[in-house]
Length: 99
Image (tube, rainbow, N blue to C red; front, side, top):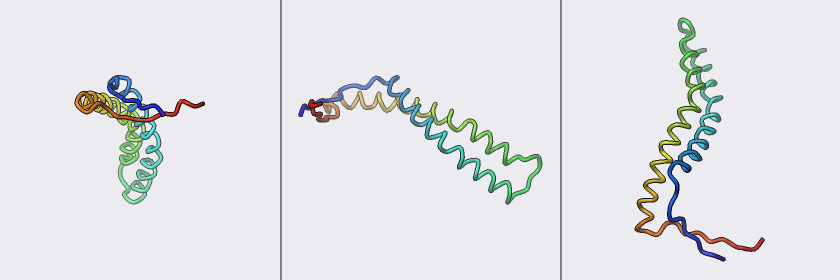
C-alpha cells in the first residue's frame, strides 16, 4: 500500500463539482416541492393560484439556486482546506497498486 496526501485542492474545479452535486440534489427535491405545493393548494383556496406560482417557481429555480450555492460554497471550502492543509499536511489516504 502506498500513502498519499492531498495537499491542495483547486478551488474553482472543486466548486464546479460541488455545484453539480448540489444541483442534482436540487433536482431531486423538485417533486417534493411540487407535492407540498399541491397539498397546500388543496387546503388553502386562494385567488389566481398563488401557491402554485410560488411552488412552481421554487421547483424551477431550486436546482439553479442549489447549483450556484454549491459552487460558491465549494470554492470557499477548498480555499479553507488549502489554508489548513499548509499546517496539517493535508488528508492522508492509502491506495493499493495491484490491478
